[in-house]
Image (tube, rainbow, N blue to C red):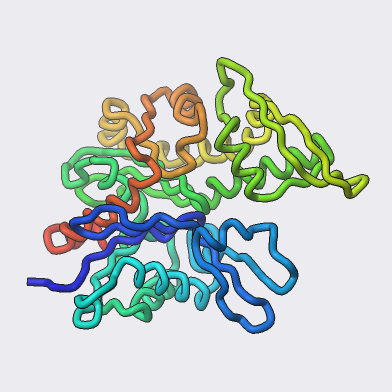
Length: 336
C-alpha cells in the first residue's frame, strides 16, 4: 500500500497543470517566473508572474523557463516545479512520504531533455518519476481506450509543440512533434499587426486577439476587437480595430504547417490503421485546438471527421493522472 501522493504533471510551455489522484486537477497556472535580474531572487511564480509579462522594469525579468515543449532554463523550471508541487503536496503526509510523479513530455524528446525533466522532479522531492508521451496522455484524457488493437489518431496542440500520433496497443505506431503551436499563433498575430498596421503589440494582447476573434476558418459573422499598441513611426500609443478576417490571414501559415504535419503522419500510417482512423476520426486536444474552425479546416482538407475533445485544455493533465493507475498494468505507456 502506498501512502505518498500520486501526482500527474502537464509541464506545458504556456501552462502547468497538476492532477492529484482522487482529487482531479488541483492546479492550473501559467509557466511564468518573475526574477530580480540583479540578485536572481524569484519575485513571483504562475499567475502573479504572468501579469508582469511585457510590463516589467529593467531590473525584473518575467520569463518562461520552457520553450517549444522542453526545458530551456533548468534552474528556473526547478524553482517553479518545486513551488507548484509544494502547493498541492501539503501537511503531515508530505513530511513522511515523497510523491510519485508522472510527467508528460513531447513525443520526440532527446535523452538530455528527458533527463532534465526527471532531475527537476527528483530535486523537488520525488523518488519515483515516470515520463509519458504527450499524445498518449492526451488520448487517455480524451477517453480513448489505447489498449485495443485499433488505430486512434490524436493531435495535441499545446503552447510550444503540436504532438501527433497514431496509437494502437498503448504505443504510438507513427508519431511526430512539430514546434509550431499556440505560441506560434501569437507570434503570427504580432508579426501581422506589425506588418499590416505598423503597430507593435505584446504577447498578452496577441493572445487575447487569438482567443476572442482568432480563426482558422472564415467565421459566419465578422468579429472585431480594439487593441492598443505602439505606433512604430511616432512611438506613441495608438488604438486599432482588428477583424476576424485579418486573424484568418495572420494564422494561415501556422495552421497550414500543422495540416502538413498531420498529412505527413497519415502518409506513414499502415493501411489497416488508416481504415480505423477513417471510421473513428481524428481527435484534437490542447489549448491550441480551441482556435475557431481549426477542426473544420483540417476535416475539409483531410477528408476525415475531426473532433475537439471535451475539456481539450485539460486532456493531457487528466491522462497523465490516469496513467498513474496504469503504470503497473501497462508499463509500456511510460518511459522511465
